[in-house]
Image (cartoon, rainbow, N blue to C red; front, side, top):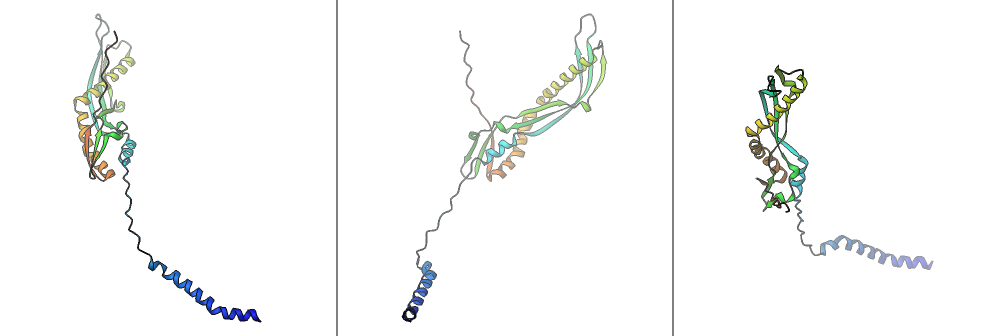
Length: 211
């Protein structure tokens, strides 16, 4: 059996070669040159704060509640007395800031620790009469027009709520509350110190009418 004899003679060499391959695979990493340590790439997302404030939309920052006696008179004729409605009115007005008006240019990152945000002007979001807490106190000389006169009186009272809120400084209080409420929230979003400033928009001058 010559083939068997040949295999027996080659068997030691086959074992030596297999052992050499195993040893090389085990120690080859040891002889490699160490790779340079890679510096991790840092990506700063500057749109995070803008996305957050846009999602807020209009944020209500202060609510003024009013209760007043409103006297509404309507001229009828010089020959008859004026119609008069007296209301006891409860109403409210809410001040807010509209975040949908903030643009990317209104957010300025200054260095690594400070961000400046230009806020839109505060505004009255809404004002209304609370009819469940309001009532008609008296009516005089309505001339069978009670419903219309009461409706007109409430419309007048509602406008008076807006005027009273403005006279009471609701816009100023909205601005102050923005500093108290928004700054901590935006600082939490960005991880930076936040400075709030008013927006300044340059409007195009009106052209004179054509002659």
